[in-house]
Figure 1 (spheres, helix red, strand yellow):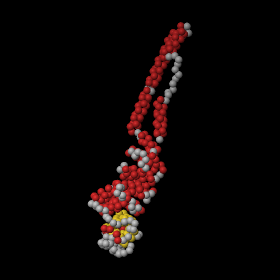
Figure 2 (figure 1 turned 90 degrees about the vertical axis):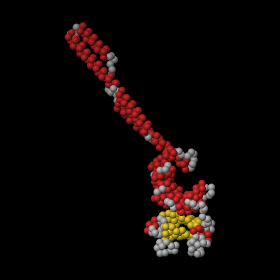
Figure 3 (figure 1 turned 180 degrees about the horizontal axis):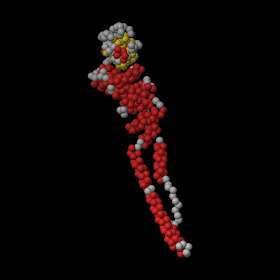
Figure 4 (figure 1 turned 135 degrees about the vertical axis):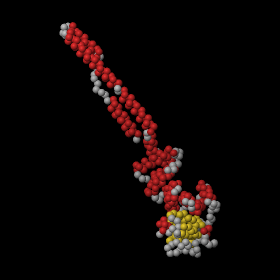
Length: 400
C-alpha cells in the first residue's frame, strides 16, 4: 500500500524538477574568446590599411564597428552568466520545499497507520488465536486495537460475518466503548439470533450501560437463553445482576440462590454469590425442593391490565387442588426470573416436599385472588417430576 504513495511522490518531484530545470537553448561556444576574436579582427583591419587596401577613414569606421560588436557580445555574455546564476534560486526553493514537506509528513503523516493496517491484516489469524484460544502472549492494548482494525477491514471487504461482529463487540466492550459494542452485537444477532454466547455478551454490554431501557433489553436477551437452557449458570448470574441493578432485590436473591445451588464450592463465582446474598441479608439458602421459573409476560397484556396481579404457583398432579407453593406479585412486563420453594406453602404439611409430580401455573388475576375468575388469563407447564432432581426449571409465556 505504501508503494503507490511513494511512486506518486517521486513522480511529482520529477515533474517539479522538470518544470524548474528544463534546459534552455544553448549556443555552441566558439573556440576563441571574444577578446581574442576582437584582437585578431582588428589586426586584420590594420594589415589591410597598411597594404593600401583600406583607406584611413574606412579603417576608423570599421574599427569602431568592430568595437561596438565586441561590447555588445560582452553584454550578452554578462546577461547569460546572470541567467545561469538565477538557476540557483529555483534549486534552493525546491530543496526547501522538500525539507518542509518531509518534516510535516514525518510529524503528522499517516504512513505509520498504513503500516499498522497492513500488519493487522497479515496477523488477523494470529491475533484471533491469542485472543480466543489463549495461545501465546496476551494481546497488548495496541494489538487489541489492530485486531479490531483488521476485523473491520474484513467486514468491509467480505461483508457481514456474525463471528467477526461478535469479536468486534467483545473488543469494544473490553475497551469500554459500550455503544459500539452494543451496535456490533446487534449486527451479529441479526445474522445468528439464537447463539447463547452472543446473547450473553450482548446482555453484559447492556448491563454496563445501566439505563432502564438497556437493562430491559438485557433481561430479554438473558431470558432467551434461559428459555432453552434453564440451568445456564452464566445466564442466571446475569439475570440476578439485572434484577439487582433494577432494584428488585427479591428477584435478584432468588436467582443467586438458584445459581449457588448449581455452582460447585470450588468455583470462583461461589464466594462472590455468597457475598452478594450476605449484602442482601440472606445468610441461608432455602432448603428442599425448588422450581426456577422463567416467565415472559406480553407487554401489551401488562399495559392493558395495569392493576392486575400475577399468581405463580405449583400444584400437585395427584392429590389436593390446594397449591403446593405460591408467589404473588404485580403483573410484570417482559421477562422475569422467579422461584417457588417449599417455604412458599399455603398450608403447613402441604408443600413441594409432598408431591413428586407437579405442574406450574402462571395466572393473571384481575380480582387479586388465587381462584380463577372470568377474564383471568393463565398458562401451565407440562408435568414436572422431582423423582431425580430436587431443583427443577421451567419456562412459561403469558400472552393474550
